[in-house]
Length: 409
Image (cartoon, rainbow, N blue to C red; front, side, top):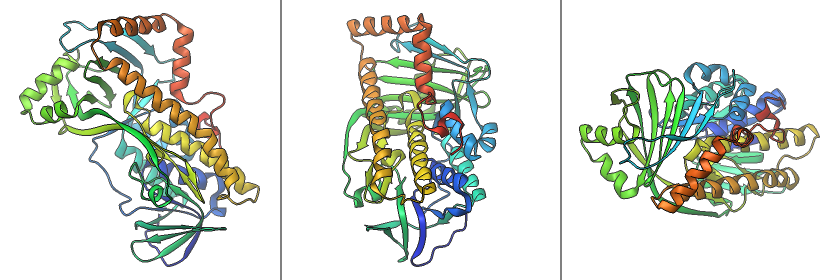
């Protein structure tokens, strides 16, 4: 991608935000339409990284999308297949925790793949460059939608025009705010402590989700003898955990992870992120579509954040490619309305569902614990129900957008 901008440059589509969702959308569009499409990604820090702190669990549908746009071949050597997932419900004090629900991968079809956010973004950036997506290293400071196009004012003083603008600029989306689109959301009262840990024995591709009274504790396999942990505590307790010295922090980690994989080491400095749920009141505006965190922010439970964002990418790309092939305006309300109708129900249902699960399990009430454990065991002994959950988590069911099913546009 070139890194220059000039006044009043004209594009078919401009994407604000060079994160995974924005780059995936731009790559999907360019892969489908090639030289006929003029598309640019605007971001003041297109190479920004968090130092391999945060990780993502890529569903089967997300992997299919990445394969279709050409990014998976770069990412695959850096990704760890999840071959088994076990779900526990208990307390830190429990001497023994037994798995209430287990999922096993089918032959040749992992449940998901774990990767660092930085690696996903870097491979998509390389893919976008290879496909000919233009890069403008700048910030969007003004948004002026019009009858036939939208104008974007940049911090450098330049302006660009596009028939469609896509906001992929994160949870604090400036474009969303400039378009006057409000959000609905709430704080969970929890923070997620994130770190990469090492262990003596092989994890064999096994992911674990421990539902503890303070919140979920996930151990997610990474390449090598490493796991990524996502450890939920109240804001105050998370702050206190991070203030512990290394030995005391490791002791607290061992109580939650246990020593089933041998001695543990903390490979990266633990950091904490406040957790909340938030989604936009509208997913579209005049000549504007929201995708990824600009449209919705969810709890890391089940690792669905980026997967939901890539579902946005697949749905929007399918609508806009079809619109352009018919010679129609990609920024008109028909295509954008179809995208909103497809995505809003999925996002709201997923957001509310994850919040309810988090509330149901983040407590130590005996009656609730008995009921939820009974429910988990029933699902574990009912193969059709387990298959239904797995298909839903994969995001690649028969009615899913084409890219999530590994089909080209």
